[in-house]
Amino acid sequence: MDVTQTQSTMKPIYTYEQTLASSQKANWRIEDIIGDDKRLGFTQHLMPESFARVEELSFLTSAEKLKLNQIRGFDYLCSFGLVEEFILPFVLDHARPQLQGDDYRVRAFLAFAAEEAKHIHLFKKFREEFEAGFGTECLFIGPPSAIAEAILAHDPLGVAIAILHIEWMTQRHYIDSIKDAKEIDPQFASLLKHHWMEEAQHAKLDTLMVESMAEGRSEAELEKALDEYLEIGGFLDTGLRQQAEFNLENLQRSTGRILTEDERDEFIIKQHQALRYTFLGSGMTHPNFLATLERLSPSLRQRIEEVAPVFC
Image (cartoon, rainbow, N blue to C red):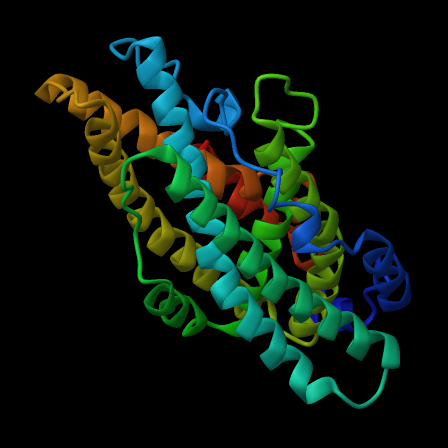
């Protein structure tokens, strides 16, 4: 099969006009979500157990598991603040050459960029709220600008695939895990709900962007772009391993308990895997993400399905 011909005749599954209309309906203000009497609480979990995986650490007390779950909420806030830092300039760079032509496309991508800027502000506000209420300082990997620079140095199609991964991942973080969870702090659940409301439209736009950028590429070029996506994943995975170590330090500082060497080893292994699933595996295995890869080339989906179990 001629891949170039396949790409040029691929029929989009979304439209810019429909996506823009949905985005306008979903629009919300940061002031509606946080501030005044809308405060994070610290008596409940912030993350669902499917992502936090604190119950696996049998040597921790219930109080320590709650602290660790909340620390995982902190690294979640920081992680999305970080990824939005490279998503925003990438979307703007993609939109800039296309300011002429399809008016719906231009407006949709400019709205996409504006909402990503809003999300940066949103996660920053929640991080400030966490730091004010948690009681001890928590460490996080960075700086975001250096991480963004490293990611944006990759093939643009590889970056676009990584962004698509992130956007479908947010659906799992809300709909599949938190939507009906009663033990999650309502304010944190509201954050995830409202974030997904807009990312649902971004996922559609990025699907269009990925397919547009893939058009005309040979099979070898598509495989190379997937290599770049996997390199980005490997780079992020190294950061997640460091974050597991930071979270150990964060836990010890917040509880005053120093773990034994064996406990520390188990903590790092299991919490690194929990972070992997939260930010890598949950996106790589999302059916809509895999479906887009298959539309580009079935071999791309096959490669990801072979790799993904390592991150789950």
